[in-house]
Length: 160
Image (cartoon, rainbow, N blue to C red; front, side):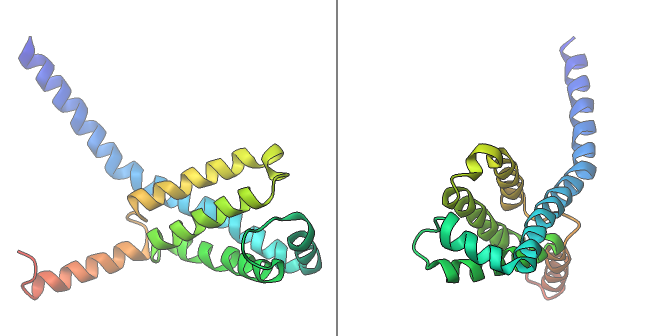
């Protein structure tokens, strides 16, 4: 009976491991693209309605430390550049950390957001954390660079 349980568990674990090999890269890609799309579109909206953006940063958002005008420019720049790095999977972990911090500042600096958009920002934060913890995954430039570096290191005798 114990042998049957061990075999069953081994088969089950093998199946789960195989499914994870397929599923996890798509999950990481999905999280990267979803969050990148949300933040990039927000940046495009800020540029398209720049006067409104400046008004919001001056009178609505309570951005800590930075002057409101600088915060408007930096916030818009962050929303237009960080998602590109994230979507392509370039320096994913550091860019995801920056975007996570940006998301956190957005939530903290705009109390009206808590009423209607707080759960969205929580979801995006969790999706960003997934990429901070697991990296970009198989479908990324990070992975391509890593495979090239490891290949070059192994041919130069650095890896055994």
